[in-house]
Length: 301
Image 1 (cartoon, rainbow, N blue to C red):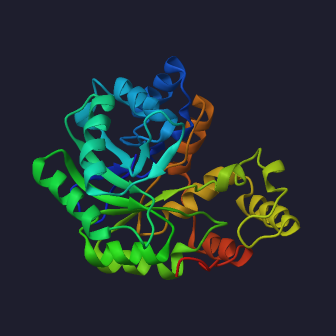
Image 2 (image 1 turned 45 degrees about the vertical axis):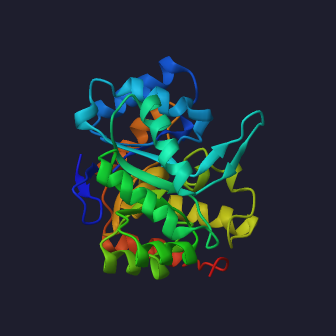
């Protein structure tokens, strides 16, 4: 599989990675999907301490135990458990990040993380303190690079300007084109790579996604969404599936380093990976952009 560089880092990743959130908690099933991903050429795996209360990190760690040097391992931080209480609270403090990384390392069964990401964030956060934490972890060798996971333009702008982030993970798909006009130019200017999550728009852009299109989505009304989805299927034609088209649309954006569709089965994983073999022509991209909308961010300016 083709590999791309994340921003200006030394991280070279398969253009299609695996978002591990949807793996579930069954060890046999999860490990089999991860191992199949490795065999298919995927080397980028993204998890978070939040997923299944840390179980997701544990399963990923077990699956890559004998492949660690071949894998680019990404996880996230910022959500903290409260002792004796259910759920999480948002905590981007330096103290929490320096503590949480040790727990993630333990669950992952490794002594370093390739890409450590802030799992959200608001403009009211102690951003300088958060940046200090990541920079300290880099100096200690516990992480190689750091990034943020956010769709908030005001937060993205601050981290791009004030930190040495390597990556931005953001929602991006044919139905959510918000990053194109406002975010991507910033990333190019500062040498930051985009990790595209949600390229299948929550399953809407898959062959079985008709029912999921029966709702409002961003600035698409229910009826409009179903109509747009059908037109995209027609554009895909006999050459590729809707999901292949969706993943390929994101990957063909030069600033995108890797797309991370999730997979809860081997079939889904293999279908996702097949998008690597079906590039879009310039005319096809133009047609998709005619059918879909160049959405704009309205919140968190």
